[in-house]
Every structure is written in structure tokens, then in C-alpha cells.
Amino acid sequence: MAPRRTRAKDLRRKVAQRPERRTIVVFCEGKASEPDYINGIKRLPEVRRDTSVAIEIDPCQGVPLTLVRAAIQRAADDEVDECWCVFDVEWPKNHPNLAQAVKLARDHDIRLAVSNPCFELWLILHHRDHTAFLTTNDAESKSRHLDGRAGKGIDPDQYMSRREAAAARAMALRDRHVRQGTEFPNDNPSSTMFDLLASIERPGSATGA
Image 1: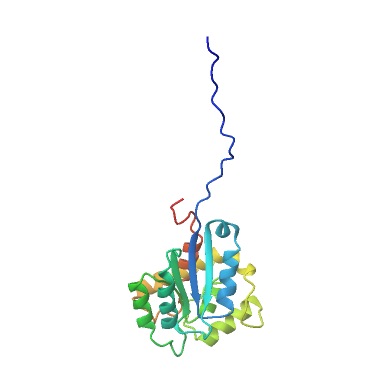
Image 2: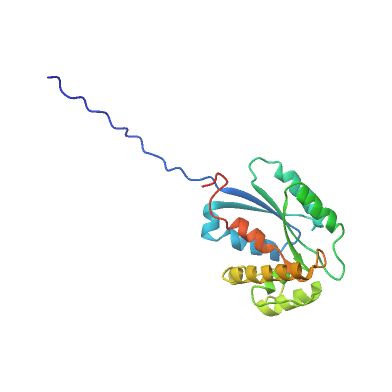
């Protein structure tokens, strides 16, 4: 009887298939605290594993409408999964063309993380509740008092462990404005930075893994 033929083994090493990371581009009007904070999020192990986050800063500290227009152009790149704009409302004088910027973003599927009056309100919410109206100067002063910083830049590491509490407080502010019928841009204080965090920290990838 003929000897039994054995099947040759495939000696090629199998390469593990790693899910493709999602790509998010964030446009910021600020040059210090907002990018500092987002860079802190980028360094989280679970974010580094699943999501590529690029930060674009307008060299002229562009107003919201400028940021949205830049995001629309960037979103045309097939490699980009989401584009976000992070900007402030500002008080007592609001940024110009706020309503136009918001509408343009919605029409082109650009996501927004807006803080009212400013990003420093979002930082305050990492430390405590705040429900009273704030001017931009008041928010900046209160924020510096809480974290002890001297300038515009922040140490993001002291905020990362507090971000869930900040998100809960910001969502409570949103719900309060809804109950009271307060509409943008009169929803002071408020911040939708928690939406951006939820998107960046969402597990999985662009391919649904």
C-alpha cells in the first residue's frame, strides 16, 4: 500500500489583523488650554489604541465661522471619520456669526463642542458644579483659582481623572436649559465638550470593530 501523504504545513507566520483606528480632526480657536486638554485625552491608553486625534489650530485664532469652514474642507478627506470644532460663545460680547457657524456645521455634518461663555467653564466643572451666569473674565478667574495655574496653559493630567464628573455636571446643565426653554446662545453656563469626549473615547474603530 502506498505511503500516506501528509499535508505540508504552512510555515508562514500569521499576521494579526488589527482593527483600523478611527481618525478625528479637532479644530480649536484657542492655542493653549483647549489643545492642552485634548492632548491629555490623546495620551490615554484606550484612546491611543482605538483613535487617531489630530488637532488643528487656526494661526489667526479664527472665529467659529472660520473654524467651521476649515473643518468642511478637511472633512472632504476620505481618511477622516469625524471633524469637530471647539469654540466659545464669549460674554458679554458674543463671537460674531454664531448662528451661521452652527447652521453651516449642521448642514455639513461637522460636530461642535461649544462652551458658554468659554472653555474655562468646562474646566470649572471638573472641580465643582456651577449653575450661575458667567462672563468670560469671571470664568477664567474662577478656573485659575481652582487649578492654581498662572497662565493660559493647563496641566491636563490633573483633569483626566475628573472628566466623568465634569461630563455629568455639563449634562445636568444641558437638561436644566432644556427644562427652562433656554436656547443657544443664551444657555450660559453650558458646555458640550462631553460630546467630544464621548466620541473620542468610544471603543471600537471606523470599521465597526
